[in-house]
Length: 299
Ligand code: GUN
Image 1 (tube, rainbow, N blue to C red):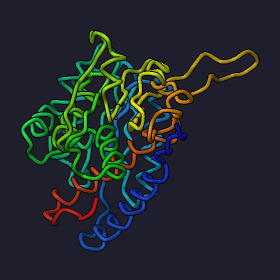
Image 2 (cartoon, rainbow, N blue to C red):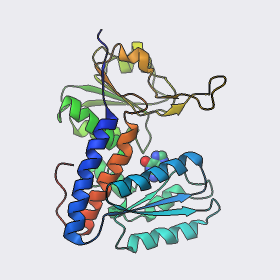
Image 3 (cartoon, rainbow, N blue to C red):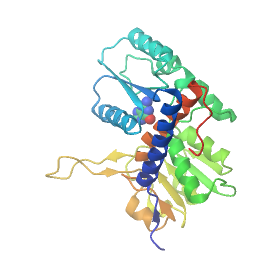
Image 4 (cartoon, rainbow, N blue to C red):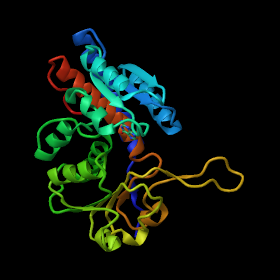
């Protein structure tokens, strides 16, 4: 079997960011203000700090305003809710993102529920989850939206006749991913930790989306020859002796799967870069709706 084509999420994301940047400039011309994203980080989780910093930088690079709110780990729920209410009212803020996970004393569901759904560019509010479930326009979580963009770019908009397996049933990735694939006419299996004979389920799939957070769990001999494989996992292996940091790997055993699949996303450089690009895209869409401007085309 020939080696799989690499799905270059990094290049796709750069192109999307450039198109968002052009549309953001046109928005600023038309309205006299930049699209604005508020990012809220509570506590000092190192990974979250990196993500939040990257989101702020990406905003500014795309000609958007970034409002960062870094709060101490012992911030009360009342204080966080009051910040969200302020951001809901703030005319300069089009999108609000509360970085997860939150410290254990904060009720994540209650915090997300407080965000105005029209500013919920993460697509985590139950109103947006419900809109996706019933096929109404709303915000779709960034990672699965990025995955479906990569899939459609490769396979076309209509996935009729294709069997898709999503591994992982999280609210942030697995469930919305299954809905997006269903909307694109794929026949979808949503598999998870209790699925029996997962390898056999995956062997039937023309499209595999792995979002479980377990390093290299999906083996090469699970993959149907020619299948399209989207690897959402970002796992750091323990460092090798003498190294400070372990290697980043996905949920798919890449070297094995590459010999069987038709196309596959690498880790890093596959799905990862899409998440921030889609966040900018969602913020741009939110800004247009907020300003009463027609939705930007082609994004
Ligand atoms: N934590 C990990 N991924 C995400 C994300 O996409 N959005 C938010 N808000 N928090 C996260």
